[in-house]
Length: 307
Ligand code: NAP
Image 1 (cartoon, rainbow, N blue to C red):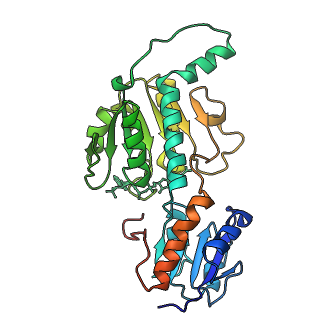
Image 2: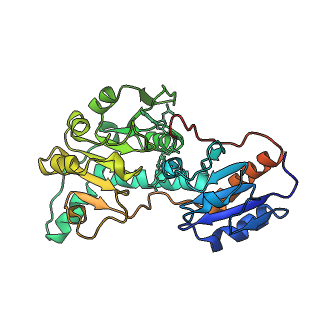
Image 3: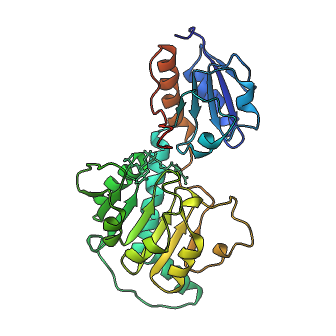
């Protein structure tokens, strides 16, 4: 059990402290918020912490990620082994991700990517309309993000399939643990997987060839899920209609990368879903309270599974 005042470190090179700290102070008025790591820190709130942060900590009760994906923290050799790591699951980010998925699915389904190209050519040409019920969206990952996207895609009338390690029951969603079986019914493939050794490179030529012709690929998970040359091959031979890429390896996407210019690719700078401090802070405060009461924190990462 911790003393009533908890010492909390905020360490991030990417998240803006000026947005987070006032909200954290208001939510946790009894606690001490610090920006410099030391041995007496109880809880570390981190996303891309400055190099050396973990080595300066003693043995905190919890490392709380400010992001949903934790593969970089798990791969960090300086991470204090055995200290529980919680990932952040917060409604603002989940909602943002589903909005992004819906926007891309609709852009492809309603042919807006083609109409944008036609406008550049001053070409007035109607493309045959399809109904949402003619299309199946295949979700790689049916976790926090995949299940929310699934429900909202169903609400728009799409058929929805999903792939997970363990069978998942979501009313109306065809759940698969066999990837090949899911790909065979998929028009639009959306990657919402954590990056692990098992999921790296899952968006490859073999997967694309199993999808229905004329579909799209939406990668909003991690750059290393995609084999870029396989994607370019499937776009160039016309099997895939379009790709929406938000994440890359490396980031930022180098200025001379051919993805920037490819007519079949829409590039965004890793913005599919950003952490929303207003909805994240109450979730973080809940975990601080759990630690204060000596309870197990919520959303602990399964280090063995890698997510
Ligand atoms: P989550 O709740 O942990 O769900 C992960 C899903 O992937 C689960 O359904 C899981 O299966 C499935 N899965 C994992 N490994 C698998 C495997 N080997 N085979 C089949 N299915 C597998 O994760 P989440 O919160 O939805 O987040 C997913 C990822 O999105 C994050 O890890 C992060 O990298 C990415 N992300 C990106 C952005 C962005 O802005 N681009 C923002 C937020 C998150 P089970 O259900 O069987 O466990």
